[in-house]
Length: 253
Image (cartoon, rainbow, N blue to C red; front, side):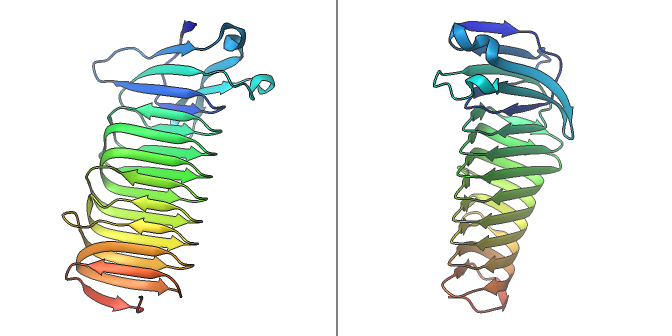
């Protein structure tokens, strides 16, 4: 059963309660729209409302608590005009979105959720990716002045293809992993702890200057052609520096 719902303007989407959402970015001025598909007996329990938040007007998709444990599939198809400012997924939800462009964009997945970007994220200023609690974020390509990745609690973030940033920041902790091998940057700050793994820019991608920190049986690899400084490298951790960068700081196996 499919139900089209009226919705006011919004520039962010927040999904919870194991809902599966497909977000399409309208580039031709198309009005926002919302179609909910599920079994008729739980349709009235699927909530959709727009709230004002720190990142703008957010479309909130959720379930009433009394049916939050349902095993019925809930699919929501969303059309949002440019620019999209944020996507978040929580409580075992899954969000798929096509190409995203804007000034600054935030992606957050928590609680065994996933976000998949089928296309490029292109931000004039910053792009932030966050994953926690056994969640997963994947993106084809990414470009921005500043690109940040933060991953915790056995989660993963990956850029599947290529990307470009002036400033790249990656933090991974708690048995998590980040793969940005195809992303080229001017500077890269990479920090891994608690048995985490960061695959930084490598050939043909590279960074010019890298700041590196690995602890608690973690691993970092990066290709740097300017300078590479290791600020911390504890026992059982490793930092692999490819390229001809001038190296300084701690020794790391």
